[in-house]
Image (cartoon, rainbow, N blue to C red; front, side):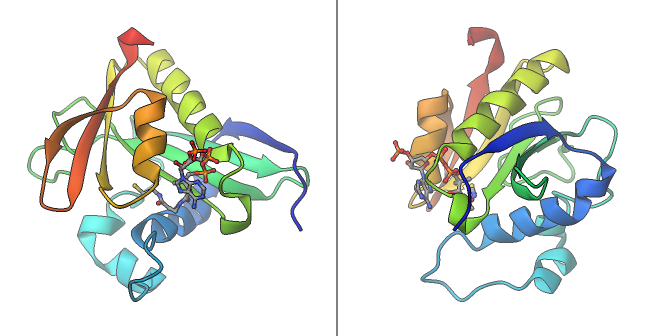
Length: 168
Ligand SMILES: CC(C)(COP(=O)(O)OP(=O)(O)OC[C@H]1O[C@@H](n2cnc3c(N)ncnc32)[C@H](O)[C@@H]1OP(=O)(O)O)[C@@H](O)C(=O)NCCC(=O)NCCS
């Protein structure tokens, strides 16, 4: 059973492996679907480019660590260009959010704390908006809406959401 205590810190280059773990968790949020393996996530550019070469200039990340220092969750931002957009791309200069928490720690406030801290870091980094893409059936959508993201675009199964940091 996991303890309750955790802390947040900024992500470093050493967190590339854990961020990849959280990317794989985000890709596989729907347990009813056949899981996509880590290798496939890293071979497919559409998913791999969320972590490739971490950290790049402009990248920002926050990692939640349990009392022993082991990572339990992460939220990170990466800028994409219009010729290589992420799923939640809205404009150049608006970084896209990825987030994941290890299963035993879900539903305990870690995701909410990560969102709040990455938004604070983004303001400090000079960004005025952050964006994301979420499949509409994912419960994470509710968390994003509660954190202040609003829907700015919709595909058949997913929404693009933006948080205006100046309004925080
Ligand atoms: C989405 C995720 C990062 C949220 O982190 P978390 O620590 O579980 O979230 P919190 O405990 O801070 O907040 C819980 C809120 O998130 C939502 N939520 C999303 N997934 C949840 C889960 N598996 N368990 C509980 N709550 C979940 C709920 O709406 C909940 O709000 P509520 O308390 O008002 O019901 C985490 O559940 C996760 O890693 N899921 C799998 C990966 C994923 O979906 N990533 C996002 C892809 S867009």
